[in-house]
Length: 413
Image: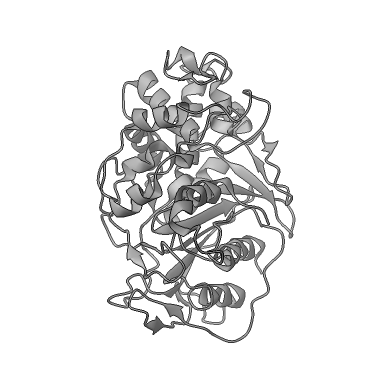
């Protein structure tokens, strides 16, 4: 398995906090390993809480399904919250009557309150498909041209150190083929973890990235860049006259009735029932509660809040053509390889991975302080979204078992 760009970005951002320990885990891709179900080892282990105490809960389900259902998923969830070290985890399954949400562990390490199936959480870069959907709707309305230069919509914004918006297209922003540097490579990690309520201006984050040379000439390679989605959010505002969050609410959230999904703008708390989010900034460091986070640090690249059931509903509507006209949906699903040996490919805010049971999984993953997430769906109507409330500081095993949980849900194993 290879490093996912989303986790790679936060891994690079957090390196200064963890590089002194050769045993500190890397933050790897969550969805990229949809290749083979990780074997679930027997036995149990306990995850360490913020007071070095341990807890252990069996996986349970918020569903009317029989207790014997989903034994593989239950085993993976139990592993995520014991041997892998996550406080709590959930997997929401869609594409079946009533759906199902399986949970394990705790949503709060202090009260030991069990993880709720209807928990809200920050979805990180799973925000990107929402942003790309709005941009593609604007393309369908004739207000944006995919292969037009970014400079047409944001004149003079992308300049300096070899970066030039006159030579970068809107499509390249959405597909990570622009070569624009990722601002997370240059954001001081201690600033985020030590002052999580700080406000960040999107233009300042873009300037932080553009103070460095591009990774490659536009269109000649692929490299994940959160900066491209900051610019996509700015483009939405420039074209519509409204903030990107308002357009996501009007065009996606409200039409689909996603009552547990929001774009929190400059609001640091999570409103509604939610799992608390934790980070472990070093190998033997205690858990740090990072639930309260000013989402402007991520903005259009990863600020949104949702639930497993809502994200499944969004992916299902997207793949069924309820949000985009056929031409724009085709553009979104027209992928290019990312270098993932497992066959992963990236479209416009949507990535695909082959499933061992056949077909493709379409979705995205996310990593933002407090939460690691991944969600995927198939064209025939199956969806699965997973969350663990620990990031950064999770293990490679945590990442792999999240991948396996989503794969098992989609393949029905």
